[in-house]
Image (cartoon, rainbow, N blue to C red; front, side, top):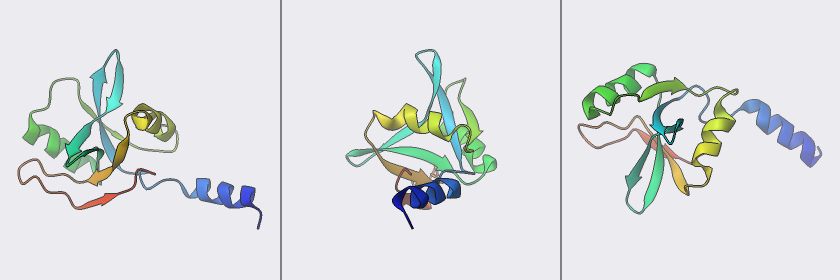
Length: 109
């Protein structure tokens, strides 16, 4: 198989983020994904369900204007572009504000 064919097949599979929920926060007139600092790195917060994303928002008493958004192939490039320049180390999945734990961590793509 040629390298171009491998890339096309990989892109058609989507991303680990597809189907996950992120929290978009107002920043400089745009909406950008919420990040969390853990150790020496920044991580994108992602949630497996809209319910867990809203639960985090309620527990954290996030500022107004923050909204959960499901990541799909149409908005994934925009979400990744918004965090590209911020040296995001990875993704924290289902972060629990009350216990400061998360279910898993993974690479961004």
